[in-house]
Length: 77
Image (cartoon, rainbow, N blue to C red):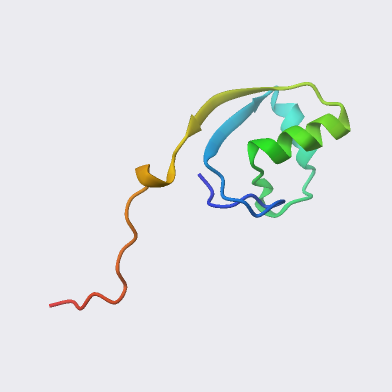
């Protein structure tokens, strides 16, 4: 899962796929680098384009389920 949405720069906590697959291509159209949109931004853009779709394979991960960051200042022995 990508860390941030390419459009709004908010953290992405929900990973999803879109059915039909053509809906993703119509909405994104290479407008955002790497085509990584949060579900909210995708929904707004799909509504503007009047594209019908449904989310599939939706998974979410909260901040406390993510692994702890490595301490780069920890001294190796």
